[in-house]
Picture 1: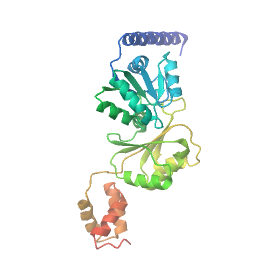
Picture 2: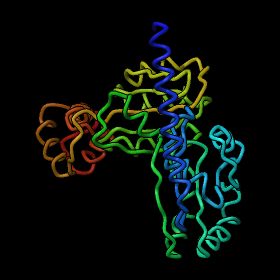
Picture 3: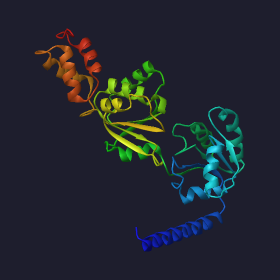
Picture 4: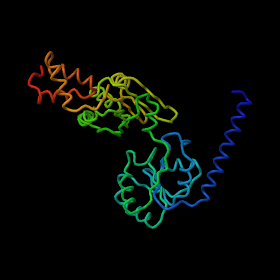
Length: 310
């Protein structure tokens, strides 16, 4: 970049900041209507905040957050001095009645999570439910979401997706849960802690097989990273257990995933079992339909007397 271009870029940035400040000043001159505001906050890069979100955070009577220290980093970055109070899974039952009472009295209250959109993997849904039951307005202030950010950069099919959040931490429970998710005809989205990434990817590869997948790390942050491949390949890359950061794991849908009922499966089995074993027929139909081999095998045992399972 030349010196002239640097000056031009600096001037453009200054003009942009002045425009944002002017727009925020107009908003701050308006009082905030009573109600509960669900404010999405940055998932890493503090610049990923909307002007509307700043307005709500600046004018709400109280901001309830998972960790006041985390939210204070954001508010101080923009020169805000709001009233912050904690609302998390350990104090939610105690705080919720007080929040609802304040809302019923006409308060404007904001709810934020540590990062991203509230209610996604946090305890806010009970507060929203009780606020609605009390006829309190509830408004979404949309913005960053690790789920959507991960999907957008994954390169996987995202017309349909299923957000699972965190899988069970124990291996047996995790694998059991994955077996239940195996037939969902859409991309699966998981959050995972760095200490469990290796084990989770290994279980994903074992249960779901060589599906296309992506692992995104530290989205929007300085060391953002995206790795794409198949589940076995990604499991190998993270097998050393030295993962760091915050992870979103995305797994593509089953191959040729289609809606298929038990009758269709049994009809197909009747044909194949004339020339092959139930085990081989189950493997072939699982690949054809994009569904669990175990489901086909179990149906064959109950429905068809031709197969021996050999």
